[in-house]
Image 1: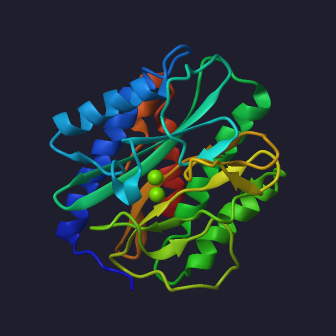
Image 2: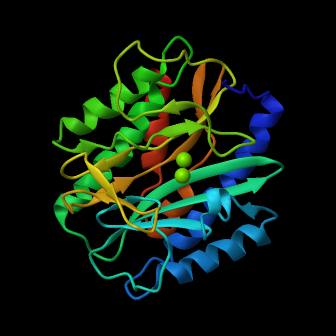
Image 3: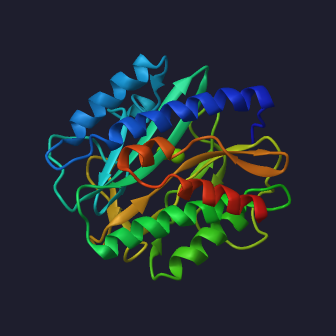
Length: 272
Ligand code: MG
Ligand code: MG
């Protein structure tokens, strides 16, 4: 069952999403060779609590930490540890926060120092695919339209779209209906409706779409050992159109990336 949110509830959800956005922005400056994912996890937990929220993942389904930290061939759900990040790594940081009874949940894949051109392209295409999917998130469309857009765009580059893990409805629960796969067929699946809030999160592999899971019961990684990227936004449907509640602008400010890029994507959404 899809839980529809009122305008007031969506504004509360925007607060939760922005706490995550700011946490990721704070972390962006700390992602450097030599830092461990466990150190970053502690920083994030402190930051979230200092901002009047609670970590959304900690204890959820018994997950042991505040952040899912998934470097290189890890797709998602990696557990923070004491291994230092190295120059040339990529690291997906997925963060959740709970405030006013609503969850925020979004993610960004960071480069650690300089990375090779092929991996840079994987990050850029995956981030762009997120917006391609979001552009389809409007009344009159169906769940399959979103997945189709992401799949077409990324498979055209020869990348693999992870099947087993998907985006999801978001609200007072971290995972609500509907599931939002990053693959699909035009015009298929549940109808998209006014007032729904979803997390769109393409998980895109440089090679095969196939995955495996570590014995820790959490970590998902690519079967062929090639890198995987992951970007996620929280999006509401308001006035029939997608409204992105989270933002990468704090990350991009910290990284010195021209933040007009995100605005350009948003403009693109308006004309779709
Ligand atoms: Mg997430
Ligand atoms: Mg999610």
